[in-house]
Length: 600
Image (cartoon, rainbow, N blue to C red; front, side, top):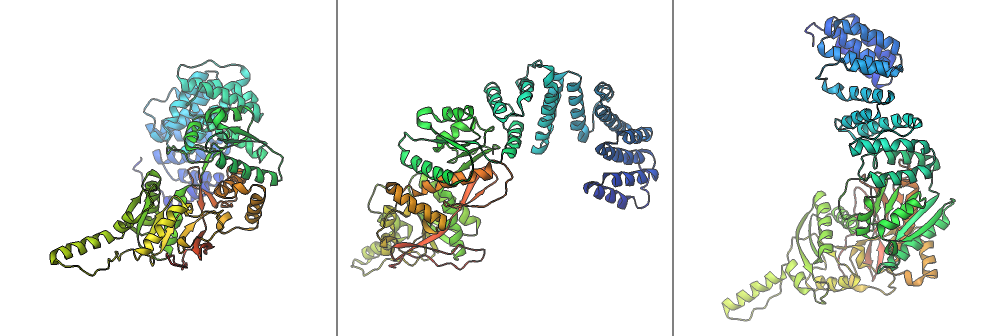
């Protein structure tokens, strides 16, 4: 940089130029840089002329930009000379002379300034493609992508390759490179001919990806191109529903199917639904068949291992899986996951408890991976909100007596041990009433069934913990049981709005379900609600960027989390007089009804 002093008010003028450019006033910004250049000499003058020429190139005024760069070259330092040459090469390319651009780029002796390396590579790649040196051009772009860290810049680089291939496609098949990534790009060129036909384009892409399985364009640029085509259609013409209909999970699958079809029949759109049995076809086979059959949107599969199996095929057709994958894979564009996830319920419990004033908690959970995963979800949310999990115990779901883990959790067993020790030391019988620990603000009961809850709640009351607010997940609630569940009185739990806070739509659907399929209106009603909401989700997911979040569904208030997962916010209810009673939704500042395991 030149040591020549800055001209008067140069700093303020530079800030003005940058502000004008940021506001899109490129001509005004260029004029300011011209004024600065007229007040400057040597490298500083060259720098202002280069900055102004860049804006003129953006305006398409290549003639003026060329003149300014010519002036800049007369006072530029060696590094600036390279920038001038690179920009003149860009102007040659824009003016339709790629050979001149390549000749000028060849005069630039490395090293190239870091901030200009990617820009010059883009110019060289485009120029090579336009003179018919396609392999070299794609090689240049592939190498350029390794210089980029920003996802938007990587996508823009891939779009440059596609645009150049699109222009080259009418010239016929392109020669192939040795690198599989380069070869994959070149093999895309013939597909440009069918890019305007969504169905044909998709089928051609599926065949292409069968050869180039891990190509970087598969989940990036090509998914975006298909997304742009969908924005014209606004709604899928054919929907595929993938469910394990001939598996042990058939009751849940049928309930989802019925809820999905109920929403479909009520929708004012002309679209078709095809159902595929993932048990008969295999998850990957059903997913591929749905794509080949022309599905515009795929819903499913349902089982977690099956979700894992189809992720490798995903990217082209927007998909709403009906479970969360087993692995935490990076978010794949157009692949979404929707589940009746217990962790959403654990988060709802933590938030409600904190809002009610709880700061310490203990938990009793099923002693297996399900229970401990749920415990981790509760703990992470509770402690993130300022609470502290003091202790927990696991229970064996195969036993009918849960007194041991309850006594241990409440420190009753320690109290009994102190009594035994005192009696032994005194040699006398001791009148003694065991005391539970006094540092608990709430109890989280991660029971997996209503039966487990009915065994745990009385145990807690028996050991003088009935005054401690108690919370559970929806598994404690049996929606089809019309009898009063007095054993669960006081327990607060989150559940689907259809079950604890239904609106008119949910009430109508529940009544229809009970009338038409009373055998499914029990434990499967939550899956029916899930199927109904899965259909509603499509309109927001089919065309990315569609407004309308959150979706007020009958399985929960639904929101994408930014990683492709649809999260549920759930209403809460409390067992009172043996039946669940809706609680007000906790606002930012809450004074909710406190839960306790009482007699009413």
